[in-house]
Length: 606
Ligand code: F6R
Image (cartoon, rainbow, N blue to C red):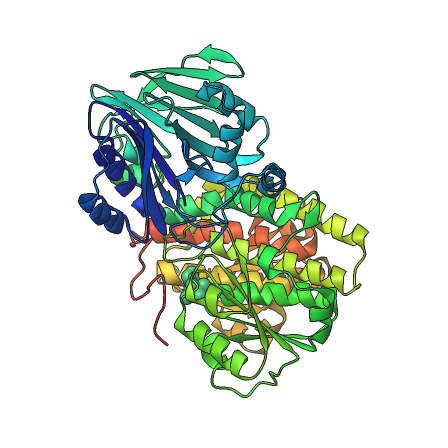
């Protein structure tokens, strides 16, 4: 996730900024850069890779100044390289800017600026901001910034310098975080308190649409044209606590981030109520070629494939074969030049998935990846790529990547179906309307966190826990079971609800916990009967379904109600309580939640 730091004061800006950036490292990044004003000019240095590399370059070419801005970048628009790294500089070289967030209407602004003769160097959305500031600048940076933010749409926190105003820096906060600290040696602004607390424990938390004008060692905060005051709040957080934003573990933070990151991802993928898949989009003639579709991945990403298969088969009326990547390489599938092989991978570096892609390519298939890491091996070796845009996932157990993978795959399915005339524009609009409501519904689900914690407390000492469901609910059951087993170390297994009586029912003893997922209307009654069968054999059934489902309430010990959505989208919501239950089970058992035993975040061996 991108992070910004800005400083002006008595200390050497380069040192304060590098230190501030190093405290943002935990957020994940792929490049870093810094700008200062020195002798009336903007001087910058950017490097791809770790902050260490930037630091070494700065040792050779130090940038001495009392004022500067810095950035760590997690690529969203444009691959990770020096040109796309921030700071982004305006065409005349006089304005340097660092940005955290996404400018949704950047293309439209870029086209407008290019028509006026502005020449862009990077592939970033950010570059439009310094260009607009240059366009509007008439000797007052604040006025130029105000005009600029009147045009840009999206989420942003940015800080900007102008070489014409050597003692001034301006920052703006709109839907992306920004905090500040004022201390004896200067003023520091940053994306996150981690960069501020080594200088000051008194933090200003800027609010929506604050503009901070730091001028000659003093600062003024404007909001909607008025000067306002923001209080300092004393923080007792340690650096470690601050990087988790007050959550005890990254996993819980990432579960809670889902609403926000899915919302951001949707704002990139849906423009003016139309799906825009960027580099992932196929034309209708490309699509007509595909006679077979394969979806290949490992672990949680494989479960995302299972959900995507449902969406594709429903919307495209084409069979989709899902396979785990470690099998795909060795087995003899019917892959050929008329096949589309879709691979899903959070890290983009999973060795099994990479081997599967190589095999698919050898067989002449077209490959498309859904991945979260720009510039990763998988993004480079597949023919097309769609990014998840969910920000770095630090906890080993995957949560926000899963929900964002399903959304990406669903949007792909809808786009393909429309281009192949399998669904109408009106149907697409209905899906878009519904998918846009998903982030808020996730936030609503998370309000019931205490109820899920109670369930975790009830199940934490169980020997085995079973998850059941049919169809798409079985996909959620599999993901719920994987989440629980990997972080709680309790044996957890998913069964198709209808299969129980063909064997697994023998495992049910008195008080065996069973989490039964039933969101799909066409199988609801059957699953409710299966729940009765389970309870008759002593199982403690926790039923998960849409709110106000009296049938499920009656056929379970406890009911977990989630907001209603269309059946196809249910897995994106239904998994959230299961993530929270897994989290609390692990935490209550005192496990190392973020780094479960024997597992690694990126599995680079086969
Ligand atoms: C489970 C988990 C793993 C990964 C799997 C694939 O929580 O994190 O099952 O989903 O190792 O990893 P990626 O998506 O990076 O290819």
